Length: 275
Ligand SMILES: Nc1ncnc2c1ncn2[C@@H]1O[C@H](COP(=O)(O)OP(=O)(O)OP(=O)(O)O)[C@@H](O)[C@H]1O
Ligand SMILES: [Mg+2]
Image 1 (cartoon, rainbow, N blue to C red):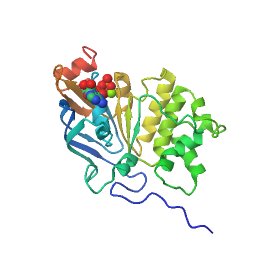
Image 2 (cartoon, protein in one colour):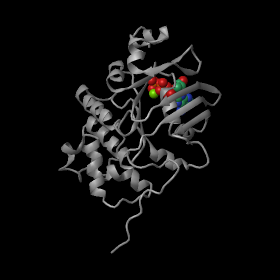
Image 3 (cartoon, rainbow, N blue to C red):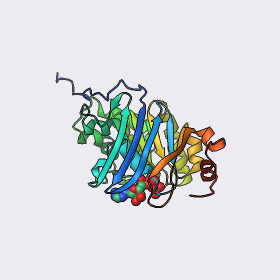
Image 4 (cartoon, helix red, strand yellow):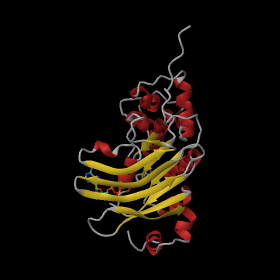
């Protein structure tokens, strides 16, 4: 009998499946060259909750999201200060390889980015393959991930067809399935529905709600109704003026941010007075 396939090695960011994970950003500032784009952003993204990041264009939401899984440092001129912890572990600390951070804290982008030359099943498994991780039963994992992403019924009979043959909404769910295959503890989503029709959007929102039962989710959205529908907590980013860095004006339970905000700028923004 062959030896069992190796599974994901334990790291400081590992934890048993379904264990809640809290992401804590403290005093995060960010620069591109000499241009400071974020000023001392602190935010707790609670376990098993959806946190929505809202705010006008250019106030640093995507930059903040990329800092949460160490993608910001891929830009050559980028710099940052402050800390980000997954539970008690500093993701920028020496104990954690950056590849492990990006496996544990996954990202779904605005435009679905499947591998067009791969089949649907291969796309789901691609993150594992690229990381050199073998799983004992890939077929079962493909099914599990597609089910959790709400795509199994539509793809069960076409798993070996090209991933490129799916609709935009299906592609976005395929990308969600792909990010789930590496068993992330946190999923970051940057405007995942902005290119989708209302029906696909509603399916993805259902998926987000399901997933938040065991994964911590952080979503950037410009859609105020979506923020209210899917998120438990919400943070409003603003810039005070041209060339100023973005910062959090108000953060808290979504219901309070929308219906009983502390800062008058929050009330104006969520009611569409500006932005
Ligand atoms: N790669 C980059 N190089 C230089 N400056 C950048 C880069 N990416 C973003 N910026 C700048 O950082 C600031 C914040 O941008 P970011 O993309 O984080 O904003 P955002 O809130 O996500 O906006 P949007 O809602 O339009 O997506 C902007 O001033 C932007 O021009
Ligand atoms: Mg953005």
